[in-house]
Length: 492
Length: 66
Image 1 (cartoon, helix red, strand yellow):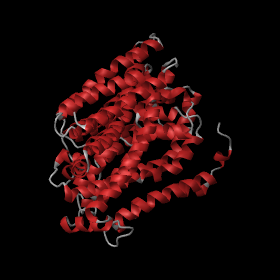
Image 2 (cartoon, rainbow over the protein chains, first blue to last red):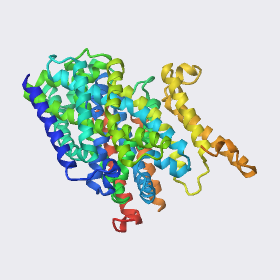
Image 3 (cartoon, one colour):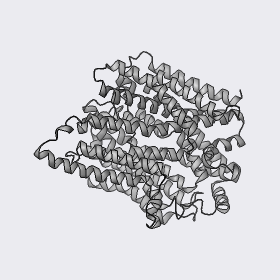
Image 4 (cartoon, chains in turn blue, green):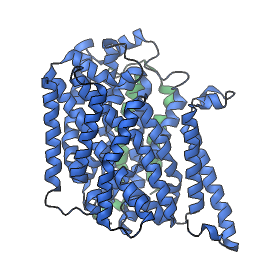
């Protein structure tokens, strides 16, 4: 075992220790296990949300995209920033309604707003399906970190298995409290390391930022601009808009919203959050440095660029520190995702079919589901061949389908009813699935369109159809309701 | 109250609306290609705008419980 792995292991033990400590002496009922008793202030909620937003994806995937695609990688910085503008209006509304109605999960929100248990189950399933790719990203990240830090001694698949086992143990011990404390350490570590790498590496290798960019521009002309076609300006704009809509639709982010003490917390956090996002710039700088220094990583290997460049540059003990920080950026969000998926399945799917089950049994079932979900994620991690960015975008196109009906439900007189919401979401999911399986783009579907339209993110189509179906179906059923309610739909 | 709604749209226009015109490398600002500089600048401005919105919003003058 080299010194890099020893240090990474030390990080892991500290994280587990904090997880055990924070759950000690608390009687963990379902509300505490998932929404932390609804008593978190601004700083805690900020860290909890940052813990979910800045994952291994921003660490490895962000530099991977800067390395492989160049300027289009900036979409990550922009969608997160613009999402905070949306959060100013959206989150306090969601929080207020959830508190008044003692809601625990995102599907409770849909059940309560639309008076439809079926919609709650559907929302839970959408959440579960969308979160699997994101869990896969965390496992891939853990795998990359451990196998790279072992300098090849541990294979990628062995590292993924180790990561999954660690994650499972961690979640089963700690729940949300462990996540918060580890999130604090994780964020401090991550910012320090990313800022250091992003400043040191360009100066070390090129003597500064501008010489680095000029060298890239000379070696790969056009790489630092959005291209004329493909990942073009219209791709960038449509992707950012899609991701902003999806940003707060994640069930685990909903849980974090519920954990706040007041709605003002979110408006306060919205101010500081965009500046915090700027740290991603340093991640991109690392990826840009790697372009000329560790060339030749293609496809999914682009995600390795940050670690490969670090290994070229630093001693093993420092690789251990980078790897340790990277481990935390996978562990914190990974644990929240696993916990959310397990809770959704136990509480919002299983319990709907067996309403007499006690809360204690639901918690027990949720904990038992954690290793099962981890296993499924391991399967996809070892068998999938997508970059982190592609996986994240797929998860987003699925979860965004919840956006139209959620936004309308916040209106005082919601023109959308449960039939419209159900039909819209199902149609949206169907289209995303078809598009993903056939790997279509708007360009292949409608080749006669101008280039700007061809490059639009395909997720936009699914969202637009979802929206239209939702409105139409709501309108049709509203009319019939005046005459007589169709009996067969009473139980939906 | 209306001013706040307009402010909400400003970051979207500043970043996405101007994108076709700022997608260029020259001139370098702060060592960054112009497009990267432009976006970074707007990230900072977004924080400033959200701070203004917070100040203008009467709801934030109430206590912590609402």
